Image (cartoon, rainbow, N blue to C red; front, side, top):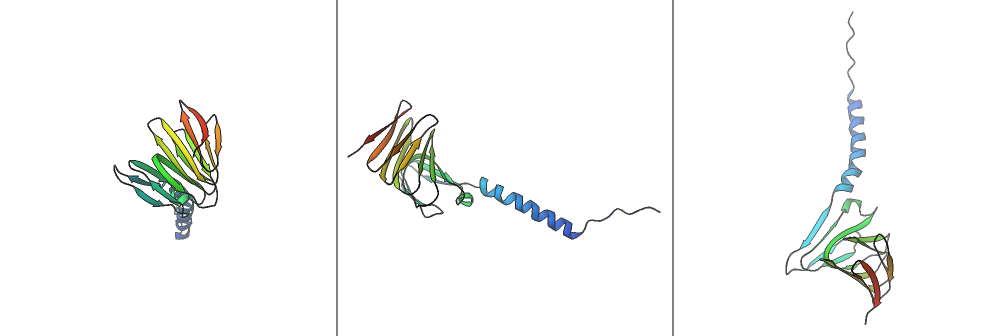
Amino acid sequence: MEEKPKRKSLWFYAAASVDAIIILLPSLAFFYTTTEISGRGNHLSVILPDGSKVELNAESEISYKPLWWYISRNVKLDGEAYFEVEKGSTFNVQSNQYTVSVLGTSFNVFSRSGKFDVTCLTGKVNVSDKSESVILTPNMQASSNEGKLKALDIE
């Protein structure tokens, strides 16, 4: 007598589907990115998921991962933007080879065609690249000149 192949129950397929969703959702959250672009001659206000505010200057762009935001507050910037960061976990702005890290402060980042400046208005800002780092307090500015970071007081 020939044995019939066993049919898998509906519960087997349902459980496999749940496992796939559990694996896929975090992956989708990590890869989903929002990009905000301010065109030529325009300014754009952006509210990030934690309530932090970004004012994008003309011809500037930021991108971030909204579904991953409460795990990692990271923004990529191309151009110029003013940030008012809500207190919370570390907030990073990646621009060219530099990273600006803060906990809750206001600061401006200018990153265009080889020129890079960060101006701290309130709180503390750490500006770093792979080889060096400077900490800014209010009324200080970090500038990159020929690849070297330099911090100075501003009036």
